[in-house]
Every structure is written in C-alpha cells, then in structure tokens.
Image (cartoon, rainbow, N blue to C red; front, side, top):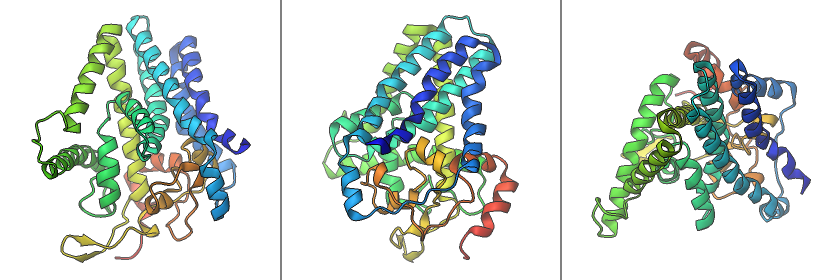
Length: 344
C-alpha cells in the first residue's frame, strides 16, 4: 500500500499554484520553474530505478485499488484548480506578469500531470474511467487525444502514418506543427472509417469529433460566463501550454525510432526498440511511470504501477523533464540523441 505514496507528489502542485498566486508578482511563475528546473535536478541527484516485476507481483499491484484512486482523485483536484484559476483571472486584479505566470504554471500542471493521468484513464475499458479521462482532456481543450492516441498512435507508432512519432532529423518545432495538424486529421479519418463500418453518416451525433467540438463550445461559454474574456484567455492559455507540453513529451518518446516496412503499407510489429525508455526515479513518480514507455506500447492495457523497465529499449541519457528542455535547442538535441539512434 505504501508503494503508492511517491506517486502522490503531484498533488502538492495545485496548492503550490494557489499559494504562489497569493504571494503575487513573479511568485506566480514558481510552480512552472519547479517543474522545468527542479524536476531535472531531482532526477540528477537520485539514482535511476529500473524495475522488473515478477508475474505474481504484477498481478498483486494491478489489483491494488489505491493506485486507481490516485488517478481518479486527480480529476476533482484539477477541475478545482482550473475553475479557481479562471475565476482568479476573471477578477481583473492580476498584473500581466501574474496572469502569464498563472497561465504557465496551471498549464504545466494540467499538461504535464493532467494529460498524463488522462492518458492512463483513456486506456482503460470501464466507462467510468474513460469519462474521467474525457473530463481531464476537456479541461485542456484537447478531447480528441482520447481517440487519436488510442486508435491512431498505438496502431501506427514509428511509421509515417503516425503524426505523433517524431522523425529522424526533425526538430521539436516542426514536429509540433505536423503533430497537431496531423492528429486533428487522424481523428476525423478514424471517425469516418468507424461510422462507415456502422452505416452511419459522418455528420451525425455518433461522430466523436463533432461531440468534442460541441463539448468545447459549451466549456468555453461556461468559462466566459464565469469569468469573462480574461478568464477565457487564462483557460485558452493554460490549454495551449498543456498541449505543447504533451506534444513535447510525444517528441521525446519516439524520436527517430522507425518500424521497418515489410510490404507496401505494412510495417513490422511494434517492438521495444520503437520507444525511448527512462528509469529516472522522480520523473516517473510524477508522470506515473510514463517513461517506462516501451512496456506501455508492448502492452497498452497494463496499469501504470505494473509497467516494467524494458532493457531492450533505447535508453534516454536523462529523464523526460530534462530531455524536453534539451529538445528546445535542436542542435543540442540532435548532437546528443542522433548518435544513439539505430543505424539506417
């Protein structure tokens, strides 16, 4: 039971955002600085934690409800944080520096932590957990992730068909544009194919892409009604930060790792070599083992507490938090990572 405790450190961040905003001024930037600078430092000061569960241990962990409760409880916590931040912005008492700091700090929490929790939830089969994942994604204006990630990324990872797989030599900024546009298109294609199989029209209530657009229209109207244009600006700003952050994680997870085309339009099976792994302890606590990413792609249904380090996967030289910072400087990224890529 105590094994779940390290995975609760993310719950310290929302009260930190509230406290920092109360202090005012540049203090509003503190939560973001802790995530982007403190987390890499914490990883550097702690030993990596490679994990290989036995079958018995994995079964036991999968059945422990405490781990599920962590992901469930994050939903009301994030909902409260976003509502509070929108209301606080809507009061009109924040300076430009404070509003920008709050936007960055909230988006870093809802993106780095919230979308990671949503990722865990949208891979589940129960309607309850799927609904919780949808709530988290709506709070960052990214509901389409639930369809694109599960039904496109996992199917096409490491191939030219996957907009969420960064290509060899591609820098982060080009990837962001291609991934965002390609991901939106993938959702429409997935829905068109699904509805066609059912004999339903594309423009119908069964189209999840249309439902997502309607959901966000309702959310934006509610935010405007609660806090006016400044509140909506805060909501849209933190959403943008969250989406860019998760796309940065996508970039790091699969950069340059390509599946071989075995026949026209057919690719080899997904293997451990198609995801970057990282065993850096603190990032994995905060991101609920997201960096044990090869195992996730080999068995997407595994709950986060049962994911293993995959020795056959390429290993990042630092944790995800550090590598995203490196990716912001493309020449540094390519100098560090390109030599680690498998030969053509």
